[in-house]
Length: 299
Image (cartoon, rainbow, N blue to C red; front, side, top):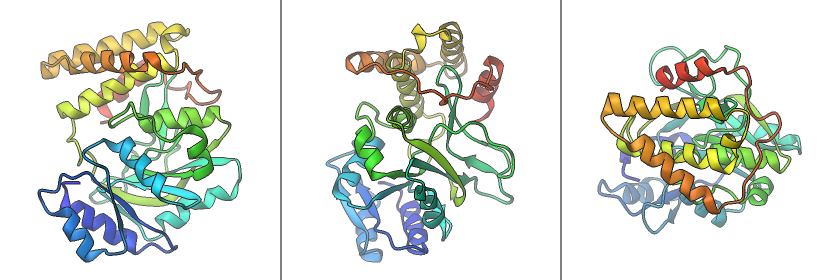
């Protein structure tokens, strides 16, 4: 944490939720702005979990899930202000025992309703996108892979069966990987369009910052290797997309971080178990040119 006002606003909205719940908050030890002290003073009911440093999103979530005991795990970013019925509506689909994960909807700040994200969809090469990004909540969304980690709910039994977030990821992509593994374990995904919150977005790393570019690139390299994309019939398309993204990064930002991050992710996946892409996980309607358009415009 190092975003005091965002955290306090998020917790104030969580306090207004319509169903009983316990809030856990990761304390990564970087509190130059006094966030932890302010939380302890204003929200004594919140359980601060000391992570031992800035361990990244996935590892912090794993630590908090490990010390909690609820049957449903709800994740919400500290830069999201949730509506009062957010949790109530997010957990409703778990009445179906086959559901292991549920996606909520985040809206962009400002007048009118414009979607920031409504879960994750992936193209045939596992390039991931926020569903309905920059569109209206009433538009038809694409095929749901699973929830985005910033507005998500997981059945604890499913989370534990899959092992939670993979510790290889620092930030970005861990939710994509978990959704794929949950599907391989036989769990289904649902969405909850009435479980809403306003998401500032990019508050942790900064939009298009070196940290964001490096970690999103790591995710791509890791997923390409773990799920054998480059051994599939979609390999030529995947190579073309990655080359274009790396070239764009060099031309636009004069950086090779997209390439270096992909190499790091590829190497990190070398020692992991190779997994197939689950049936029904990808949205085959996302063609090559649509992928390029979204990568360029849907940030």
